[in-house]
Length: 550
Image (cartoon, rainbow, N blue to C red; front, side, top):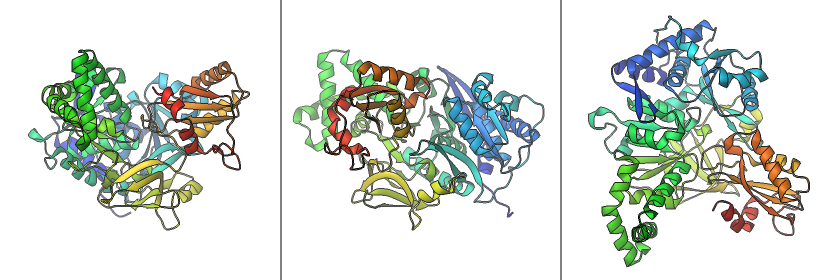
């Protein structure tokens, strides 16, 4: 094989370049636990020796099941350096689903963070080739060698994502995919920071709270290492506000759910300060949203709020924040404009696991609320087909689904464009606006992919008398359901409780609306062959859906 240098060389080179400076940090409440380049390099060396001693060879799949930590980062780098294909899994996923994915990946090794997390998968798969995460760093041996060389087409990671069937598909990302994407993100972050990539003192501070097993989070981690930034990670979402304040980041990747929560929390605090204060802020928010259409009173309120209130709000959220980045789900125009009011621009990024996390991205000073930016450098897009599907091609496109040729073929058009499954429009400057899904996968504001059909089928099975069940929640903070047919409310309540007991938090039904009248083709809610017309259903029940989220 021809000798190739990949992104892994540069990531490990960052550790060697900054032996005494923190490159990774763990936030434990207000306490910051730093890990210097030398500390991380030592951990990587030990983990490489442990992985090698367990017989892992280049090209083998290795599962990594753990919450975020410095050990997670070191294990990931060690696996990559040994030439393994890393399969990162979500630590909060149901044990049965995890085992199904693990067996499909055919791993040579499964690394799990602790006995408690390993208990469920091991019970379902006693032969699992298990190693505990702590054990990777317990030995005396260490490997201090250059990373195993890879060809551009060699896989580096397989990230499993749910499809319309409800079965997880393994997205194969290659060395070429990541090698293309990291320099592009590097340039983009430099523009977002407005300094060409160099903060005062030479280091940007990044805060991250989303699991590294997701594609976007992985790119945040690798980009920080690529650039030599300091990435501090949350260790408990319960302490997120305290951790964010202590980390003092320059930028953060977010899902819209957190930004909505911050906005709601601040608005709630302002209301408590009195009617006059609350009225001033509400008028300012309205004026900021309306822009040129604001009334004179709203414009005056906006000027006062920007001068007296906004700076204090920004200081409370993060005085050092230069920007926030939002991805994985639609961000409301109202929330994006709200953050602009307090002096923190929010830039959107759009992409999928299959596109190495990114297709489009906002540019500084050029974001249009409600849109997700233009294609990044080297990426082509088009809107095509009867359903106006957004399609893309370029070096960011994945190699295919692991051991699933049929799904791989279905993901592409006959002329080689990847089908995103998102319905979109383009403005006159080719900014992208995502307006819905051509596929039925729901993406709530947490960023998880949730196929509704398995939930709907199970809800019907548990609700005798129900004729239809429709799960909604795309772009919303949680999932809800519309249940139609002559079924008692207490039956549906019991069904929802049973359904929620055995599934991850992001798939749970939080509320439902019961309609005793079944849906019919005559009502316009079903096709002639009795299939759900989802958009028509959501439009028909718009008021009831709004009440469930009120």
